[in-house]
Structures are given as structure tokens and as C-alpha cells.
Image (cartoon, rainbow, N blue to C red; front, side, top):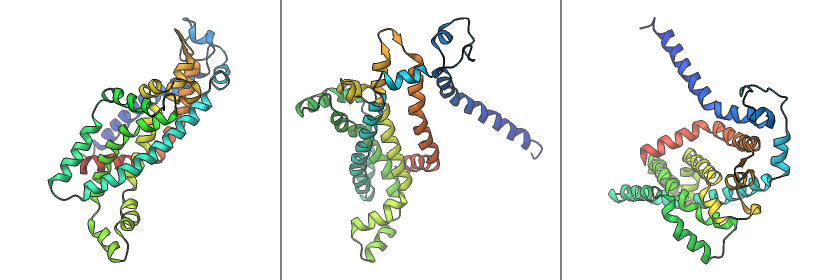
Length: 280
């Protein structure tokens, strides 16, 4: 058994490196393509894995000078921050109430919330469109601020229920004995212990608002109000003409901060998904 240990370790490393390269390939390919000249990219005889012609920054320049890329980034960031705040403001008290509800009704409510999350977004499109129209929010970022919590709040509530259930009630009761109110005990004892779950909710919500395409295209028509996921393809796909290098550059620039955030909070993010899913 001991003699086989090095072989097993080597096999694990081979598998790990293989999947790491497999996952990194799209990002590397996008980065590589971003700096290719048109003649290099579209010439059939050129090797796609090398720069047959000198690399160029022209397509990155197109992204910043001929599109409203920075406006898209700003809109996505503003919408993401607001939706994260709304999601936390609704999911945290709802999840805490369900987690502390004794008896079988707590589990039933948690499952009902998760089932609501599983409702396809396309089924909600017509009623949400009517609400947006009645409120006069067409072609406004506030339309997306109104719509996105219907997607993020149910899942976030279900996830946080598992965290709050894993926290002993004795901790809250001790804080209340020390003179804190119920709300004070929750803020000072429960929420710090549920930090991995809260970070998971923040990352999930922000990623969803940034990646959504259907609602962003349906409710926003002017470029000045579009998000990254809608604005970049609308500006860089014109009929049957695809500005591939600029599209790839936008992909890389958007992916870098998201990848850094995921890696920085990776342990807590995985812990949040695992504990929330098991306990929920």
C-alpha cells in the first residue's frame, strides 16, 4: 500500500493538471485572440495557436473608443450593488425566521422557497413586464433592480436557512441574557458566524446580475442603460459581422475581477454552498 502511494499521488496530480488546463483554456484562448490582427485571425493557412503576425491593441482600442464599454461596466456595478443590498435585506430576515420556526413547518417553508427559485424565469417574464410597464420603468436600470431580486432572493433565503440552523440558539439566548435585544443578538452573534453564507449570497447575486442576458435585453433598449452582458454583444455583433477580438477582450476584462473575487473568497464560498445545501 505504501509503495503505491507515489503512483497514486502522481495520478492525482495528472488529473488535477489536466482539469486545470481544461478550465483555463477558454480564458487563455480569449486573451490570445484579443491581440490578433484581422489578417492573422481570418487567414485559413495561419496556425491559430501562434501569432503569425505581430499582435495589436487595435481591437482593445475599439472596445473602449467605439463602444460604451465603461458605461456598461458602471451600470452593471450599480445594479449589482443595489440588488445585493435588496437581496440581503430580504433574504436574511426571511431565512432567520424560517430557521428558527420550530416543527415541520420550518422545513416545508424552506423547501417551498427553493421550489419558487426553480420556477423558470421565462414564466415570470410576462407578469414582470406588466409590472415594469405599469411603473414606467421601461429602458431604465431600475427595471432590472426590480426584476433581479425575484431570482436572487428565493435561492439566497434557502441557502441562508441552512446556516442559521447550524448556529446553536444558546449563543443568541446568552447574548439576550447579557442585555441585547433579539435584533442585537442576531447582529452581534448570528451574522458573524454566518459570514460564509453571506459572502456566498453576495457573490451569487452579483454574478447573476452581471451574467443575465435575457432580462437585460428585454427591459433595456438604449446603450447608455445597458449592462455588460447585453451591451457588449449588441455593440460588437452587427448583423452577421462579429468583432471577435473586441468581444474576447471584453470577456477577459470582465472575467479578471470576477476570477480574483472567487479565488480570494474560495474557501468561504465553497463552505457556504456546502453547509447551506446540506443543512437547508
